[in-house]
Image (cartoon, rainbow over all chains, first blue to last red; front, side, top):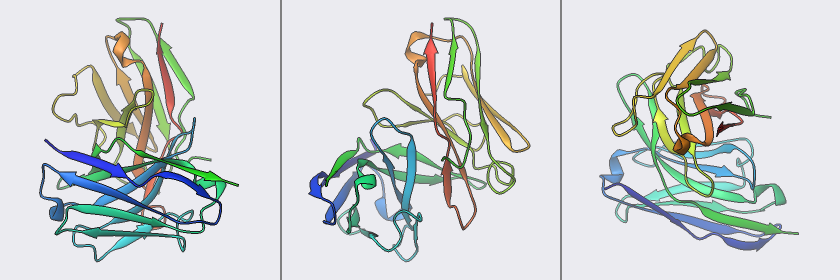
Length: 121
Length: 111
């Protein structure tokens, strides 16, 4: 069974840093691209960042570029998101998601339960 | 403001059908077959319901179907059931400049 378990969320002051992790199990982690998606309280889903299966390629939404760093450790089946210079608007539940690609399309086929990041001013 | 436009709400009675639209542009929905739909119940993680415009993952009831015409994708839920009440989000690949775009979400109410 595919499982994604996020951790590392919590309360942080504006301008501070936080490191989120996502522990993967039940599949060959090193074969899949991974993503972070967030959801502010009462709001919709917002795409944050992506990393390729081997970690060599990354992508950041404009809101994350320059402040967040995505990484992965395939030996430990772990996905990370290092967040710095946190702002009030970064407050959200952060989900990790696995990317599944067919021959013609990609999607997010499994999601973690999310970890809440609260930013205080 | 979300890159993809969804109606904020939709509703139907048990047994009826309801369709939720997702409008983008030729740079996302209209340009790729990467449209997916996710269901989210309150306090829960999103769940994949439709991918590649119209394909259903294993375990998703065939009451859920997807389609696309031009820059607008649609999710249809037939034979509405109480457990279908949830938020639904569409997403699409948006090219190298806007990698993944989400819709703002539609709250589906089963009357």
